[in-house]
Length: 366
Image (tube, rainbow, N blue to C red; front, top):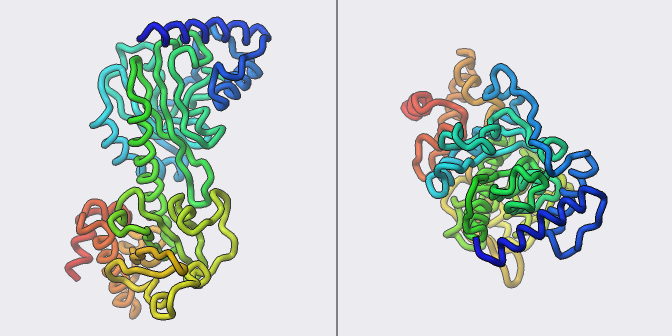
């Protein structure tokens, strides 16, 4: 730690104690999000010198009871693996919390010998009222990336901890959770932020892909960004209304950043397109260029049509009636569309459909 940074950390420790005793913080001392978290921590009665308080874990902490938590854990799994391969190591942990601060997924490297990190486990909530300021708490409260270093935490106990997080968003742009890296050491925060932002977009795309009742379209100005975390996604209902859009799509079309979308027909979103282009929007095929206005266009690819609520159970329980052949054809079409959306990746297509690889191969062979 450099001399200037050491002096800053010492100044933070002294200012924190004065603040806990009822003093006022200098506006330039902390980022606004962190200052608000200190204020919430003080209001909750947290004292800097106290030990962190964690509620006891249940008998089966890794068993997530809420289907939404299980879905989030499933969708974030691959991105946590990739982040861990790049940035994981001893004395570090990566995890995902839901909107209430409960850890739903985690990657770590034997934290038993790192006492300050040991309590960070799946099933535990990281609340300001218990442990003061943390990056996930700031991300959840303010819908913004957060970095908390050393004495920027509200508890003295976390003076050696580096903590960075980015928010995750749901179908309506609401804060759904946060991705975090926490450890005892220093990291390049700017580099981490770029990778974690990409991972958050990737996780949000997987959540969109699991939205079964709708058609899904991928959109981007540059076709090279399709099938990457930077693709826009539109969920379109059977009546042609745009039900949801991810963060990238909302920016592309100038839609509200968060909140349910207004009543918006797909044709109105592509009002600048030709009649032929609009007819192709919900047709499978290669990406094609669609005009938006005089000086702009996007590339659009149809990813898949609506899926049964639970594709796996629908496949297994479909009765052998006269409609079975039609259902089988629809299932095979969904499988082919999922494979096309993932460039032939069988594992990824199976995860999207909620079925096993074996079941996927069986429906391909029919």
